[in-house]
Image (cartoon, rainbow, N blue to C red):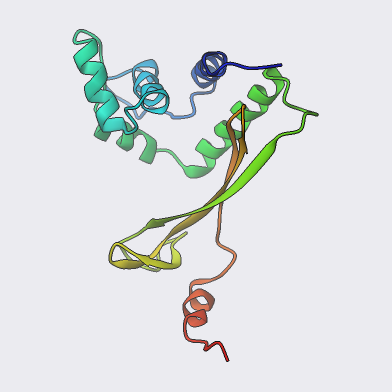
Length: 176
């Protein structure tokens, strides 16, 4: 079964609306759907950031409620990672069912990512990373993605296998 990107986006939009992957804080000016519209626009257009997606949607629809990229970042950051990952995994389970992906063969990729961190190095989840942009501390995770004709991120996994002490001490060993 060949699934079109529009079909997956339609399914994803419906699932995101039911799941509320992002719980909005009390007293927010925008609805979940307003926020979701910006996120989906950023994900499906050449506009690849929340800031530019928000600006683009405001220009196209000046009378609609369109939250700024900063507001959406604040909404996301007010949620726990555990809650977001739980909702994400539930959505993926439904997409796999709806797209009839179970029991089929797909190529996958495992990608490793480091996000630089400039605060206190003893913050939970922060570990030693390859120096980047003036820091050697950051968050590390890997993603598991279906690649090829069907594209889908199956999971994102926090990498904390090595402690800060071990990670930093590894840099001092010679290759004798």
